[in-house]
Image 1 (tube, helix red, strand yellow):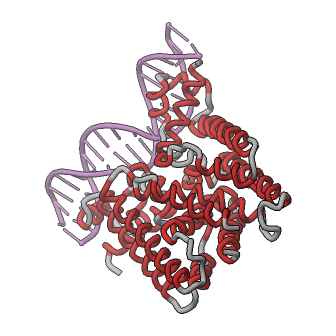
Image 2 (cartoon, rainbow over the protein chains, first blue to last red; image 1 turned 135 degrees about the vertical axis):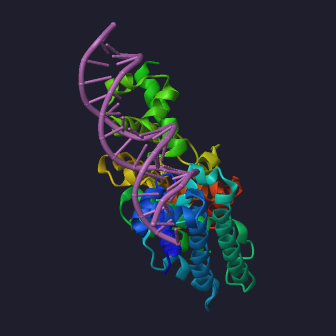
Image 3 (cartoon, chains in turn orange, red, blue, cyan; image 1 turned 90 degrees about the vertical axis):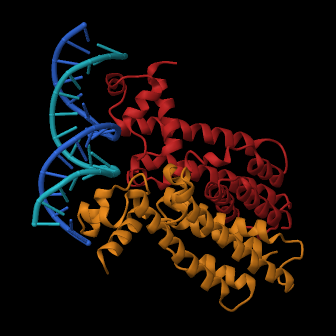
Length: 185
Length: 185
DNA sequence: GTCTATACTGAGATAGAC
DNA sequence: GTCTATCTCAGTATAGAC
């Protein structure tokens, strides 16, 4: 892995752990084992580096979600698998956490990959829910778009509750709660 | 309002807007119209001031939620009113956003009020759900604890989605989705 | 490509005068 | 109680040597 990639990887980690405001160029360099000159040679500055890092993280997250939601099974099975998959709950969501970063949200360029990630995720979930409804597995009155937003929100809010409690428990409860409602249709 | 209160109010605003890491003593002083000496006279430092601010915000949030959830009406009515009440969605939750602050989560003293707020909120919601279940309004199989976590998560996650999209729409959809599931019991 | 030097501002706090 | 001075270190970047 080249120095450039080391810088991007270190930035990804730090953005996840400390957010944009809490991440300094110096800290990135330290973690990447690169010097000032090296960083400013490869990137225009902190923002430029963050953009590369966020894009990469967003890509990975979507690829994983897509694979999971497209695996075989009924709609409810696929959604259950997605919600219940192994997660490092206490670390939170590397993309969702960026929405609390004023400098990210205020900048259209930095916010764009975050926005697209959730838009894509909701669309994919709505697709699955629509399939379930059309197959008669879910009630015909169900609104796939709204419910897709609910499901993503349960995940994102679950992370918030888990971090507040310093325990994965409320995350698991939130997921159980929505799945119970879904199963009872 | 004394200088001390001005400092706490300014800190509350800044914590909401920029988080703990993104809020500096100097910025607080500027906003409060107070000098260095004044701030360090009333508070031991940034952390001490933040603690006072977070406690105050937590108190207010809980008082408002309690009042709403204890107002007259069926369980579903009260929960609907709570979820649908007027919110400044794009500003996010002043308590929930703190869970993304590494320095808050890492410090037991600073995290405590955040933890307690959500614990209290979930307990209150579970109470309401339990009443609805006992009254036959909601199915007997319903798990109040899990569903309470789900509802709080939908709110917190709704804020995340709204800020990502720079629009309240996904928040409203997430709320609609969970209410639809609840109404269909 | 990477290093060192330099610059300037702000973070966070202490000290002592008023 | 509040003000100003001062301190040390970090944030963010540019310049130019190697």
